[in-house]
Image (cartoon, rainbow, N blue to C red; front, side, top):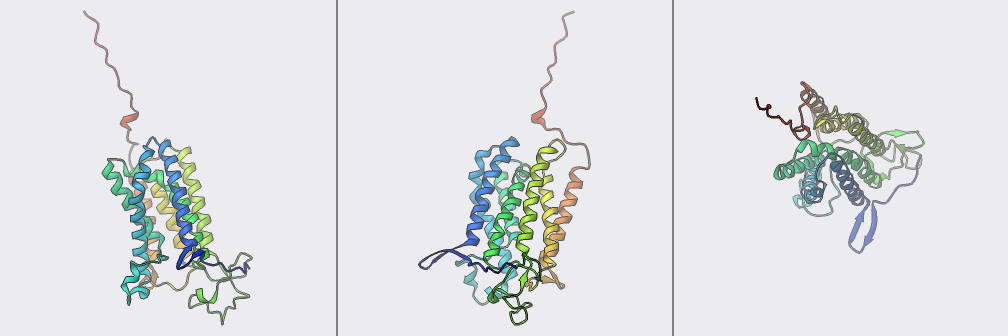
Length: 285
């Protein structure tokens, strides 16, 4: 068992606290922007506009992440609605963030007259790898853990961070480790990012615009649905089923259906790649 329990604050400057959670998101965004630029250039897109659209995408992503979190944890905010908009903003949900970010990419590419699906595919490896980095913020917050385990990588969780199902009176801090679901998700999404990079290079001639976005839907949907079955203490459920699992099933279905739809006929010809055919005038008779 890993007995160390981390502090969520990286740096304290008087009343201002710099959380590891925020640092993780900042590093994830920085790495993501760099990798999007690399993938955009490889696909013949104008990488210089990545920085221009960053603010809109990040703002939409943060709004979406915050909205999902507030709905999920409504009991925290229902008696004090100002908590929704006032700092600290430690509550951000990944599904909401991705949804908001996708809306931001769509709005920006539409405004610039660019292909949304082509840019989305360029961003998918960054999305996967950014998720892998940002999930480590959950480690420092002592959250996103599963049931007790005797495995050597089980994490100690302070009593104050326990869900009701695992009180310290029943599961002593000194002897109880918990499945690190954040690490499982981080490792699996990192793997997804490497797979997306490989597919984009190895099968570029066979892929169609939007295929890597569909890959993210399927890959992350499966990962999230499986890991959610290990969690306790859900707050947002429908019919006794966690909403995160229901969303995952919908996302998986969208991914599979969108791939089937795009590949239902011959690959469309890219007009930019077709050389003009010269027609010679017939010789004078």
